[in-house]
Image (cartoon, rainbow, N blue to C red; front, side, top):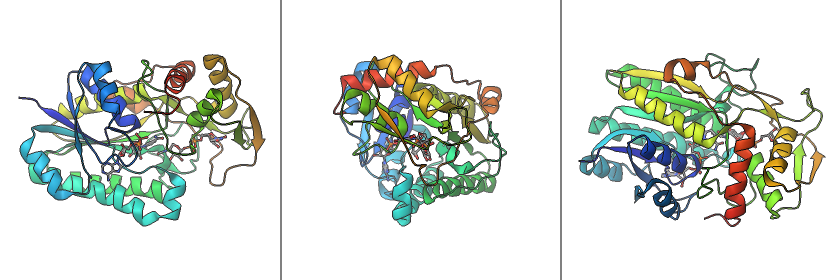
Amino acid sequence: MKNYVLVTGGAGYIGSHTCVALAAAGYTPLILDNLCNSSAKVLDRLATISGAAPRLIEGDVRDRALLDRVFAQEPVQAVIHFAGLKAVGDSVVDPLLYYDNNVNGSLVLAAAMRAAGVRTLIFSSSATVYGEPDESPIPESAPTRPANPYGRSKLMVEECLGDLYRSEPGWRIALLRYFNPVGAHESGLIGEHPQGKPNNLMPFVSQVAVGTRPELVVHGGDYPTPDGTGVRDYVHVMDLAEGHVAALRHALAQPQALLTVNLGTGRGCSVLEVVQAFERASGRPVPRTIGPRRPGDVPAYWGDPAAAAEVLGWQARRTLDQMCADSWRWQSGNPEGY
Ligand code: NAD
Ligand code: WQD
């Protein structure tokens, strides 16, 4: 009998890459996704990469009756919960949508898991919970002060899951705080496919390189950083995916556990370093102009990945050049996405 890892949001960017890593590690992913920000076409690509496509249950993580049916009918040993909305700007415009989808969705899922006796949960949190940090690298013990509803939705879920863990024995919960996930699977068959104008740097840069957009506007060139542009901890999505497998393996080996772990490289890269690495990887120019700072942006931050190494035995190993080369392979091979 199959013993599934239920991957909510598994058709999305990080979820699909994690399905590859799960399959490579001998786990069988079962995807639950409402496809609000993804395409079922990813399944054929996953079949090519992994030899078999994961099953997709098309549905919403807030649908308690559906979750009860899934847990009753399928042998699920653990859940990795990616399903959520992630656009910071949208969360400011429609905070209730974000709290409903991200917070309520997580609570419905956790309640269904408790009812079914499935108590192993890996949750997609974000370094955005730190807000503007006092120092970098940021350890997990740093104060949390998210600056927008999206970030607060992640912190609320972390706190709810912490309370759940303390309320009854046997829960194994990992709260994974990702820094800036970028790149794509090395096959170029799956990758990030933002709808409309990308909010994030790497998909914007790749669309400029492929010719879909004329130029990049660098948001601010006067930050107190070595070249004046913003600095972030970019982490390859396959490293991140493998981090989830490490967290799952660790959690399943514990009688109970509550972990909060950063997933990042521990290194900061500036916008201009990313642009130059992308030009090297693609062999294409990336025209850019320096524009004003983007409201709400933090000048520079990167994570302290020591806990991930100590507790999970995980370290990011792919370089910025690999992140750009893999993004380019995906973007140039799939200029229209899936
Ligand atoms: P994504 O939008 O590509 O993937 C999310 C998936 O969840 C999509 O396939 C979407 O259709 C699905 N989904 C959304 N709401 C749902 C619902 N109510 N029911 C069922 N499915 C639903 O985003 P991603 O970049 O892969 O992010 C995955 C998770 O990681 C999110 O929770 C996000 O907040 C978190 N995260 C992302 C980043 C990032 O920069 N990409 C950084 C930190 C944390
Ligand atoms: C990176 C750098 C920009 C676009 C966001 C969310 C965060 C997390 C990851 C989910 C910054 C600069 C960007 C552009 C630019 N997501 N930039 N021109 O803001 O670090 O984090 O995604 O949890 O919550 O806030 O990522 O990729 O938007 O920006 O100059 O067109 O690139 O100013 O310095 P960010 P990003």
